[in-house]
Structures are given as C-alpha cells and as structure tokens.
Image 1 (cartoon, helix red, strand yellow):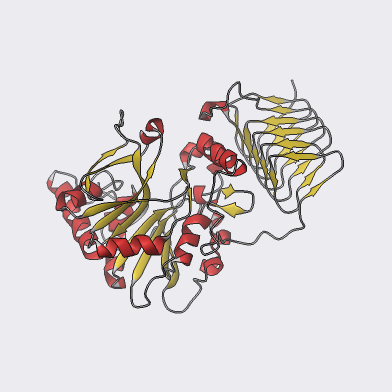
Image 2 (cartoon, helix red, strand yellow):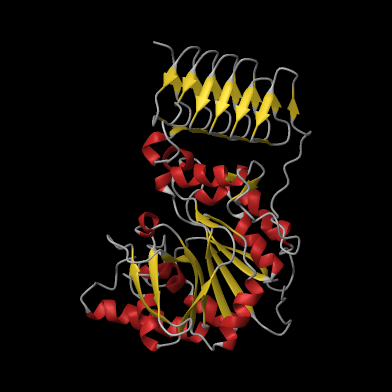
Length: 419
C-alpha cells in the first residue's frame, strides 16, 4: 500500500451534513453518519479511517443536521490522530454573517456545499481536494487513487462501483471511453443503461474546482435566479459540476476494489448487515487500513446455556438467553429466554423480553419489546424492500403481547399497548 509523500498537500472534505430522511424514524434524533454499523462502528468511521490510512492529515467534516449526534463519535478527530496543531480536524457548520445569502446557512446539495467553502479551499493551498460522503460501507487504498489522479493529470476523478441496474436508478451512472476517461454521466436515470456508478468519492484539482464552481454560479445567475437567494442553484455534483468538468476532457474513472454499498435506505442498511454476516464484506480485512472510531467500553458479550447465536454478532455487554439468528446486536442488548430475533439489527441497549419475536426489523437504541410481543415478520423470500422492514425509533416501548406489523414505523419514544 502506498503512502502519500509528506510534501503533497491533500485536503479531504467529508460531507456528513444530510438529514437522511430516507432512513425515516432512525434519523429523527441522529445524523445519518452517526448510525451504527456492525455493532461497534458508525458510518462516519469508514471514510475517516480510509483517510487516516493514506494518511490525509487535513480533514474537514461538514455537519448540518443534528451535529451533536456526531460530536461524540468525531471526538475532535482523535480516533484518527487528527487532533494536531498543524492541519488536522476541522468541523464545518452552517454560518451567518459570512457574506452573500448563498454563502450562509444550510447547503442545498454537495456542489452547493463546496461553493460555500470555496474561499477556504483556496486559502488552504492544497494539491488535491478529496470529497467523500459518510453513509457508505467501503475500504479504499486512497493513497493509490490519489497517485493515479496525479499521474493522469486529472481535473476530476470519480471512484466508481458496479451495482445492479435497479440500484443505479438512485445514483450517478458513469460512462467511460478510451481508458479511464469519463465521457458522460446520467444522474439518477429512470432507465439506466449501465450499473457503473459514482461512489461519491471524488478527487478534484483545486483551482479548476473553484473556477468551475464560480463560473457555474454565474451561469445560474445569468439564467435569471435572484442573487439574494440562499441557494446557489448548483445542487449535487451530478447536476452541473461533474458534467461541466467532463466537457473539459480530463475527468477519469477509478473503479473501487472490494465491497462498497450505499446504506442510506433501510433495505440497503439491513442488506449490508446480511452481507457482513455472510462474509461478503472485506472492509475489516485490511491490517494496513483498519476501521477506527470511538471506543465502546464494556464487558464481552455473554450467551447463556439456553441462548443461541446462529450466524449472528453481538456487541460488548450484550446478554443472550434467547435465540438470535442472522442478526446483529449492539452493545448492551438483552435477549431474554424464549425470545427470538431473526434477520434484524438491534441497536444499543435494546431489551427483548421473554417470548417476544423480532423479525426483519431495525430496532433503535433503548427500546423495550415486551413479553410475547411481535415486531415485524419473516419474509417469504430473501429480497428486501423498504416497505417490508419494520423500523422502531429510539426509546420506544412495545407492550406485552402487542404487535407491530411488517413494514410498521414507530416514531422515537412511541408506546404501543396490546389490543
């Protein structure tokens, strides 16, 4: 694995500010990048750990929605050795009093977000800007990607992955010509012609990035948008910025090696945990780029004589006296005698009381599923959809014998009593 030359100046911007509305009740009280994965990690850990392995030592994390839920995980950059005097970790938040309306407040897309910090990027005087999202599961040799970006003298590099054509409808589909040169993109096409998509890991030549952002903003203004709006009109990368860079002829694709999945929807989040249990995820298999994050202290998980873990994982402090199959339990989860948890993800400190059943569900932290209650139901097949997964918000209470049907949604703090 390569490491970056000391003289090379790289700035990384991790865009962790979105509301994550597609995750419904699971992101009512947390930012999406704060969602746990594999019991003891959070989604924010994956981009941050790849940057640390390169190593990239100037990392800005852009936060907007419920940023307080991310702060304990970010810990000022300490888990990734970014708590340093020179460069290191910086938290970017919406501001007021910074200039024109479109330089203030909340951003309206990832290109819009970069426009708002363009002066900061200019002042950083770096050689490469790396922009990553924080709701994906992946591990990448980022130093090698940066090296190829520089060797090609690319103005933009899109890290790509191969997905199913149905999944490609929600992504930026990437078309390439000779070699790695990108010839075009289709942003969230209705009928994708390819499953090659951008992974939302982008590398930019800083001067070109800034000049194109400013040129595109001027174009939007010339088309009649008032200058006093807080929206630049630049939207996401696939709307204006990346197509404009492709026209310049120096945008390249770099396919990711190994596992990659966008887990920003319930079915994708649960499927990623299925993949983890089936051994299809390699992100924890690279000693030279370990996944690091905030510590989860606690005693080891414990399984009683009447308990069973079958194709399952349990985090620190979990206590299992019922049956857990094809599921992941967060720290401190309790599954009492006679209870069954199947094809589900239970986050921190969930209690499943005796005789209860939890199937095809994601149950948020601090929830109690009462004796003989039923949450969700088993799928008839194996294919997941958002509508088939039951979501239970944090600190909810499903009373004794109560039923939450398949695909049900409980807001945080909800109490459901038996009929």
